[in-house]
Length: 430
Ligand code: NAD
Image (cartoon, rainbow, N blue to C red; front, side, top):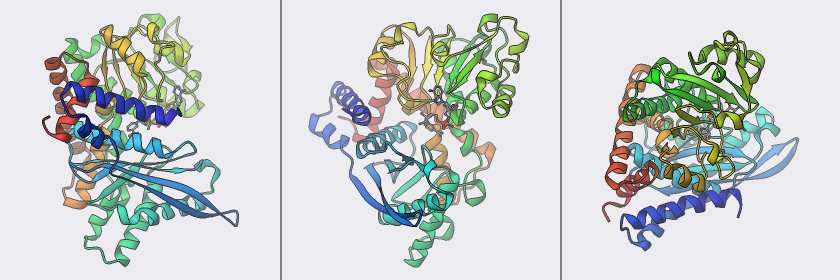
């Protein structure tokens, strides 16, 4: 079994087992699991004066609640099974967030770092031409994902708008830009999209703290990954009064652990140092760490095992597994990365009473912000930065509360409850 079929199998196994307990019929669950449509496209692009043909996919999983929605990734390991699994996750995620979308995912098998900028632009435009007929502002709305960014999305939407006008599609100019989200702010994008996912995670952290009966200043937080999600999570959580006691990137991290988590790190200073030095593990002397006599750097493995209240994996999948689950000391985990805890480790940690906020709830603010961007383009509802954060907060607070209450009622964990809620919203009552 490849890594990707593994992820698909794990997700579908969970849907089957949760669905069965909710008394959905087996055939209804099987019909739900399989994507409505998977489009496979050939992408000829001139590389060094020679045409090379790349392969791309778009998996449109489900559109019962609204247009298909999901990112496009450019990666060597993309395959059909991966986009299927990720499109299914998107269907669940949009249902849990309660936004009027379905789920989709796209991908191209390519290492984008091997292409020149011109070649990358041509590949992005060719992919758009090939999937043009199956996407659109009211049909399927792609966005950035791994190795794709606003610049790439700007090329794609430009190509989309050009063809749509040639074909005389019946949309206003602004609505045509709603065919993609994750555009740059100057190009009909959303002011607030960049920090949305990390911000949403920090909102979830606030809600979780209330459920744990603690104030932010009493809670210590450890964050693995200091990219888009990890950094903004850290910044907003610190602003809300939580103590961020350790952060890391791929090369390792820093902590004020030896001082007993007294003050926490100064997140902005650590970030500025990372930008300057290239990696966090070279940043012992910023963010208060220098003042602490016994401070030290640490590996990513050590970071995951710190004795802090809340652990926030925000980098990669499968970082907590049977290998290290017995060493995890956190009282709660917020899964900001997709799939950071293996199913066996999830079962073990949940049985020990560790509260785990599942990825499809914890990082749902990204797609929710995409919805606000799309709404601005298609429905003309303008939303400024402050309003974006406010609306994200209210959507995330409700989603968390729905899942928490369901878990209490069913006496199950939060992942079970979030799958249960998604199934009810997608399939109706059993
Ligand atoms: P990013 O590339 O901006 O940052 C990733 C961070 O992880 C970097 O700090 C990197 O140094 C670190 N990292 C890489 N390998 C590591 C390792 N072996 N150990 C520890 N740290 C490591 O990516 P991102 O956008 O912040 O996304 C992080 C995760 O969140 C991914 O799983 C992504 O799928 C998920 N996610 C992101 C969004 C979003 O809006 N950006 C939305 C939903 C889910």
